[in-house]
Image (cartoon, rainbow, N blue to C red; front, side):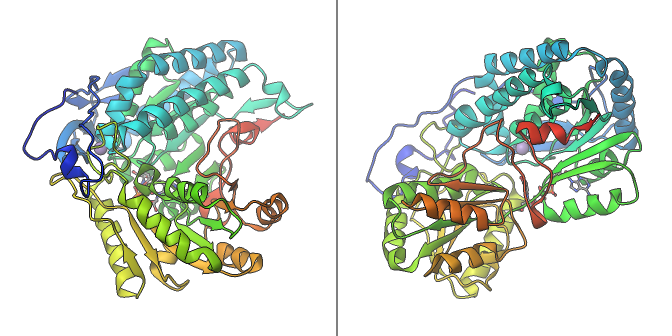
Length: 494
Ligand code: NAD
Ligand code: MN
């Protein structure tokens, strides 16, 4: 994408809140190769939707149309399932070593085209190019590499037992890490010998459709992976199709509930990865500068569109004033703006709807008496943007302390004793992740054993690895993705 000089595009100086630093604009220039219109990927071919309907995909960077996406109806979803069921017959019988070769090829092809995909991901979803380039793409490739390694070693996942595939897996994913969530879903399903019907989120379907070309280049047999696009209705058709042996869903707790209810009367397996309201807990003996970096990474990574975001900061009372002062200084130098600029820390909010939701929740925080802190940054005039926001004086009853905001908004609460920290941290219907910052190793172990969260990070935050299982407790869902646990969720033990 060449750097366009348009009057609506702010200069680097405008993007800064003041004259503290001056950066030249550093826009990424690799071509994103995005088609004007995408069909559906069914049976190894790009096909037009039977529905004959398409909808616009908007780039949150500037609010302009990026591409047209097919709106799959029930007949389209059925065609995808038929193709997947047909492909399952031979794919499931292929030796693991052969399946692994395809996964390796997919991983290598993703690496080859990683710059192109990173630009497309940023244009489509709004995340900073630095993140799509350095996190989303390498992690997506890593998931295929990791699972390629398992494909011929399934007899060693659960010693003495072997793993059998389940059949056709229906997968529905969200918009915050479009390609990475696709990788989390497709790689383990294929490694264990299943075939797939996947639906990306309606605001971020572009990289999934581009990924179809990687599958073709990898020579993956037709029908092993099918990709259908559309919104909630298409997702419901994927979930409710009779040929699905299992549904894997990542998204909101609200939709997760609908899906669980719908599957309750069937024998389909289900894993749900839903929302979160993670506590990031900082004790007075923590190294404060590192903690502040961890807090910033915990909540402002990917504009806060992260299910495991450290959105509730619990600070020990003795250091609360100091932490707030340091945080305010730190967020004043975060660079908000054009996600294609390599210097940008906080890019665009994924959609207009999400921006509205964030604005409403922030307003509720102000109305309910929390104290708001926002740096005076200038936001681009077109596109969807929101400044990094910190709330202090937050009480447990306020909406901003309880509801998932899914935006660059941090709520600070305080505590006095470790017991109080645990009680407050666990006082949520969610249980996806948590962070602990302290110099004391024994306290880390004590906290990790008492926090009801699927992942607990210690003196770091938002660290991921394909070998490390990820998933939640309570209303954050069930099932694990990554590691051996993730493989077991795609197989039956024999
Ligand atoms: P959502 O749950 O509505 O969408 C997630 C996916 O589910 C999308 O692909 C969507 O098309 C599909 N879907 C919607 N309705 C469906 C239905 N009835 N049956 C089957 N599939 C359906 O999430 P959203 O509206 O995009 O985001 C709303 C909230 O969800 C966010 O504010 C955040 O709290 C949460 N969220 C969580 C994650 C996560 O990683 N856990 C990711 C995105 C959003
Ligand atoms: Mn989009």
